[in-house]
Length: 457
Image 1 (cartoon, rainbow, N blue to C red):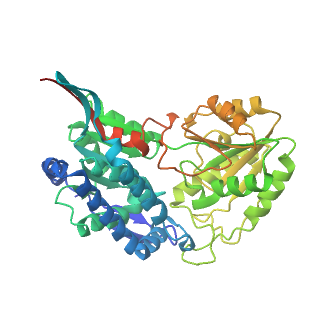
Image 2: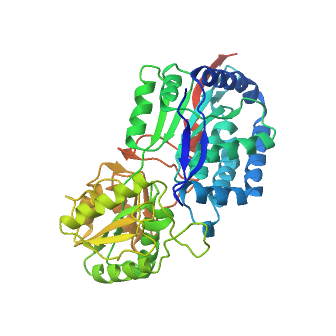
Image 3: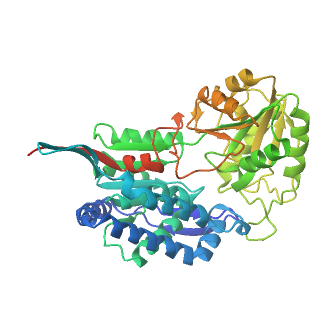
């Protein structure tokens, strides 16, 4: 008998949802059906494929109340923030708006003698393995362009947000998508690896842990299946001496603490020019002390629980280890901190890169802050990391930000902002963050393959 896939609510530890994973036979049949549906889907005019996706997006918008309530119960997002529909729609709309140009053939020659061109061909069946922390927005990053480009999509969502996959399936069904073109599927890890290893997919897009990314690559080894991975980060912020201090504090601390710190591109370490260090820390502590940790169903709550107690345990362990090594904590334990999923947000100073809190991904509401004397020291510290997703620079000098950015080992360089995904720019990373190209024109290139035509007339 297959083990149930269970979502335990971080609100109270109760089982919020559970589903039986498909048997391997049923899973294979579902993927085969997706492959059969793909050719007919790709044959539809691009405008029709876009219209189907837009109808599904509108359905999600019409059912935002469901999104908000289910996110609170599944992963602890406070209801006051209203779910993820804004970013979800922004990303889908942008990809739809650039599709015609992004997928247009590259004409090399169209003469009396030859037609030479490169077209974009769908990958076929795209497997999207989506994470729980931003479950709608991370899924749509690949689902929308993959469908628009003529692929069929199989979505395997995280156990913690298993109802999100069902909501998206309902949306595409309501939009009238042909059977098999979008399939939400509940799988265990073994079946997922077997399907990948059997070569059922043209592309596997995985967002999650480094260990999970390695498992995807191992499963695909020898199949020549394209694998795109986004595996998180330890993203730094750097506050130069000329920065707008108040803006830097407000934005960086929000980037560190929003969603209880559970964001791949959240700020996990901050380097502040020594001339602003004391003032930055004072303002940051005051801001965090204004947060209300509590039940995400309460409109007054600004910081909900972490999605699972094991994630909370890792955050507490990193904080405790840092304090034992000499770090200074600045936030007293909040009344709602239950030692479980409800975690007091923490600011630490007197930290070093010998501490895990400054090296390992924390993925929770804790941030270390260090003073630096100049750009060179800040750059060296920002690059002293196994991850490379985003870096944020606070300065009034755009030229300096570009010069610094070119020296940073990262996928995105921000200036005077952070923790944001611009759908017009490529979402990518380096080092243990993985390899992939999401959104932008390059996002369409990722879900298609080039096909050359050399036609002699």
